[in-house]
Length: 210
Length: 256
Image 1 (tube, rainbow over the protein chains, first blue to last red):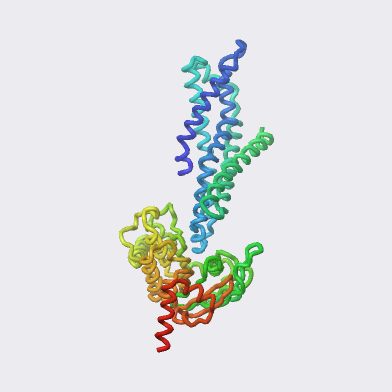
Image 2 (image 1 turned 90 degrees about the vertical axis):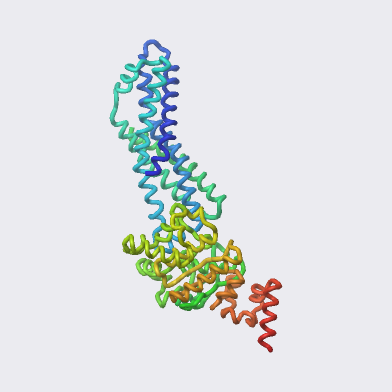
């Protein structure tokens, strides 16, 4: 629960600006009078649902939550807190790592939904305030040619990314050896490896499911 | 009683422990001493099962822990309490939650019984009124005492302490030593302490195992230290002037 609540503000902020910037840039590139203005919000919708909300947010999630997971577990390892659990007869991996994976799988898709809504709202606000597109055109563009499968696809991506980020970050932290320096290294590696995994998974999911 | 038999351990090509055997007696504070890097902590971790030894076995009251199945290991671990070098308190939990943690996981006590037990243990280690403090809000000595309270909360038969005095001032060190010894006698448990603190060696070393370069070189009590006849032990224990004069005084006293 904390994983989601502590990230929601950042997600809302980033996604709102992403939606706004995407609207402006799409509008700036649609110079032909033969292309209707509602295409702007149509493009923003597709980009947001397919890529910006699940994938770009995953990169942010890896940087914020993934590094925190690796750092937390790494600190527990070097301060012998994990050893203390083992001595008590507790399976420390399942006690510490499993809840993080489950929490991520549950919370990240919700964050993606929030991010998608915020991105579309950010686009709406900027698009209408700058006179780039009228409110009616924007809403029409969002509804025009809507393919529900893209939502399913975004959710599948969210589950996969959440699993990858939480698993990679937890394992990097759990197997930290050494001292404070190594905890920092583990956090950095967790983010780097997670981002590479996200990009690879993004490609394969798009190849397989679209 | 804990018996270890022919424990050896190496990491990569570095031999850390070589064929260590011995017994740790019930109702006594058993010390493992030796200079830094001799394998004391590795031996302790082999005994509690945090590290799997390459050879040898560990027996907890005749139960072979090293070769035990998962169930037996869990059963034995429920009888173990351990104080770690830095306390190893869980950062996210307050003092009360830290001490209560083993009870939550390992027992079926109700909330009131658990609270009573936690308060008893905190009182026993001289910590009252700090229940709600976080580990970051208490001193190093208090952390060690909370660690001891957590280690004894589940009525263990075996208590392990990894350098309980590290980072503490001499006065607090003596208090922690005395507490460990009192608890050992009071609850009649087998206590194993890893230390290189000479005050501990002389104060609570009812049974001492001296490790040198990964091998056991000597075994005895603190009363036998002055006439061990082992040069490496003499060099280790009687390094400074105070200790040397203490030894001379004891030898002179004995000869009179």
